[in-house]
Image (tube, rainbow, N blue to C red; front, top):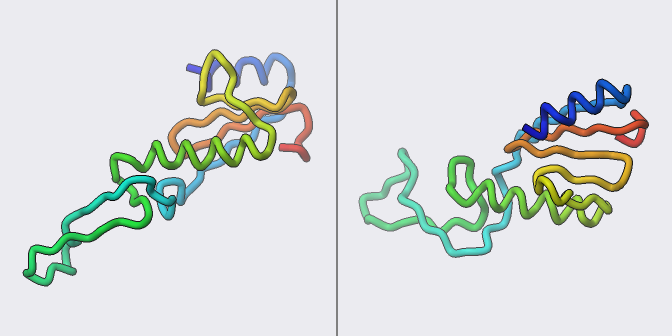
Length: 114
């Protein structure tokens, strides 16, 4: 819903809009819990051993949470903070970043800042 509202606000105020798709959003993020998985197909060695994950994988239940934590930490370092009404929308005053899974919608007055 926030996406639609931000599009409407940007259109009415003649703001610049950029959209980003973060291809590796769910990969390579450091996990904060110990997680084990069965050996992947093609790698089974018939021992029944499991793999301990060091990094998040696409499709892992915890991956979206790890991605959001990584992104929100980076945005906080860049002086962007979640708005009270929706924690998937970040602002630094004049620029807004809306997060939807691994897509980012960036809205602001200045194309260069975006």
